[in-house]
Image (cartoon, rainbow, N blue to C red; front, side, top):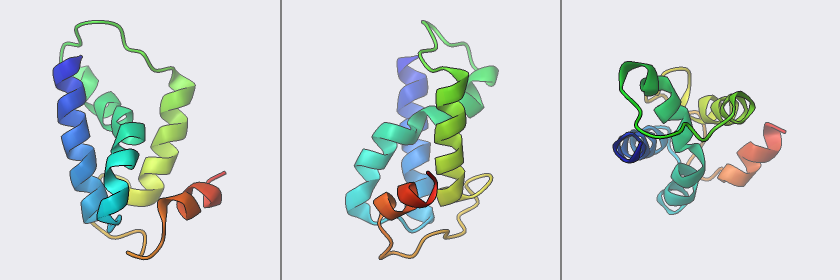
Length: 93
């Protein structure tokens, strides 16, 4: 699970940067959103340990993540560099 988390965090950060998220927001957003990327890849890897996220948690985080990075982390900017992640969160609630 630790290796999966490390890889998911790295991919998540790259997706957020590509989507135009301000650098100062990347770390806190990765802390919250990395499970989305891990969930997408866990079917193709062996997870050692317990998967700690519920279906509901992943669904909610996935909705937020996709609003920011798009359907497949395609690098298309979804937010302007001046739009804060907190304003995105408010739009998605």
